[in-house]
Length: 309
Image (cartoon, rainbow, N blue to C red; front, top):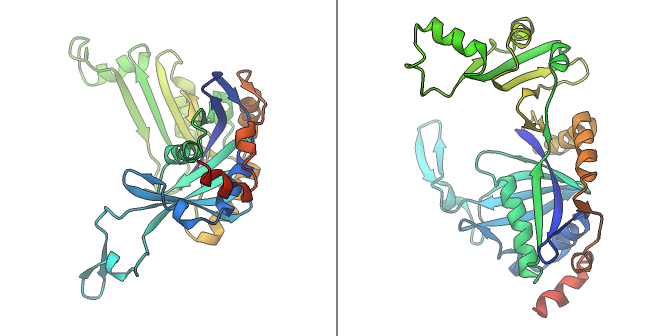
């Protein structure tokens, strides 16, 4: 499971301004507000979505899948039954994403059927609209990175790598000549994408570094190398050409360990720290607290606020 990182801000539609504001107190107050009927009103594509606190700045962001056909299979005789028949009245299946909130960014990890990060931004904006704060929007964008060839060449372990080249790269012509093709025959081909895959858990450092050193920069659209150094135990994506989102890999499926691993990754990701500083230094952001939002930092204010709408 991949943990991707996103910077966020608050957009003021009336003034066309962007504010760098810590949204965590607002989210904590929402989660503390105990009106269950109110919290059942949030949906996406006909499914209910819920935000539930776990510990500290970690949350579960869940989405029901009542419109999916989900079967239970008994391996001993391959008999099939409906999963939904096992649920009691009022119960639903929820597929969870994992959310880590910080003062200016958040980390988001999800499995296939769990809600995606864009749903979370939509969810916060639905809360704003429901509170009569539609002049403000919660805006999030992935924190992006790019690596240098020198950084990759220093990596002692390299795994799966992807290279994409267009016609401006001399290697494109080499591949065309290898196939015995002419320029006219390859006229409609935009680019070649080459995937270098290792055998299971094998280090292909030497082979990939040959490509890194030999492929010209001109016409190199993407070069993605999965690598790790001596200080980190997981592979990270390094983009020599093109840019990719800052991310970490979560390698456990045990619920309790997922939370610990998220905190560990956030703390140890040096690239994340650099990109957060860049995000917070964005000159288009004003460091401002929106009073209409900060007025709801206390959950006790929600009941009166909602009843007056």
